[in-house]
Length: 139
Image (spheres, helix red, strand yellow):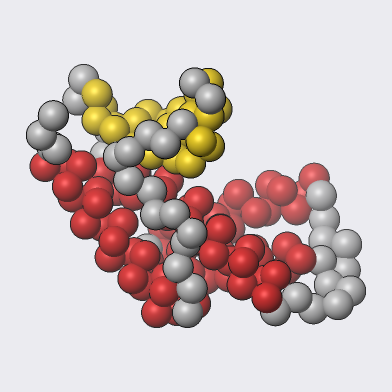
């Protein structure tokens, strides 16, 4: 099946954002999301019936499925996961004894997403605020 222009744009934007992430962090995600379903718990994206899907499948079971209509919405979903992965790896390599690990992880995730798109950073801040209201930092 020929790749649609929208999927090509998603791939181009994801590559661009991964390059920005690498420039800021010095790290790259272990697996960059694309259109291939590995059926091993890795996300992938597709276009079906004119809609964009972001899925995670493992052993034939769908674990997550987001449906969007806009290329930028899909790129945002992909990058939130990739940035969070890299921020977690960075935090682990630079762990501060006695500090809640989410302090660095959340800060870096928000900062790197903001650098890519200020709206993404704002959405991440809101998501983190919800988490911290229920589960405040322990340090």
